[in-house]
Image (cartoon, rainbow, N blue to C red; front, side, top):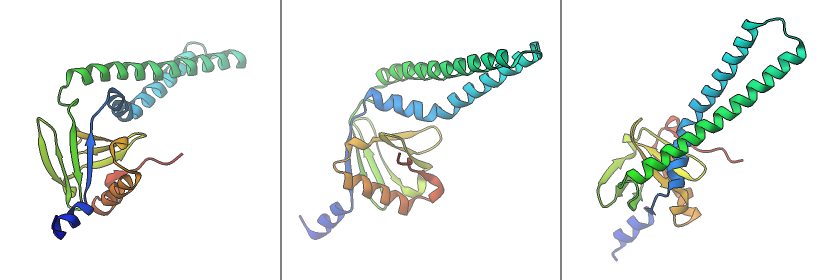
Length: 183
């Protein structure tokens, strides 16, 4: 191998990714988190509003029971909506043959290449809409409706993950990448 080729390989990160159902579920739950929360809060407020409008002369204990019941129903709604998203994810995963193909990503300072049996592409970092991180995934948004999913576990080493984050941080505007806060 010539020195130029060796230098190029030292600055690239190659990731072989094979998505699982859990990855698609995590993606969909990640992107519906705000709408699920909004639905639960709106439901809570509407029910409390109705309780107050129907009978404003409730005792403190009756009102507390109504609030706690409403809160319980809102939490149940949150989980039912999440369960619905998981069911839709199963259907999407098994109906999308492209999603289940092995994908190869090659990340560098210039951008990245991706390839599968059915498609390939080359993207400069300046063309990226956004990069997000969930618990187990890096999500590269090419637009508001197209996301490339890179499971963290598919990086060869922790060092490669750290280098990937560094590449993104040095090539994507700070407002366009969002890392998960460590807990």
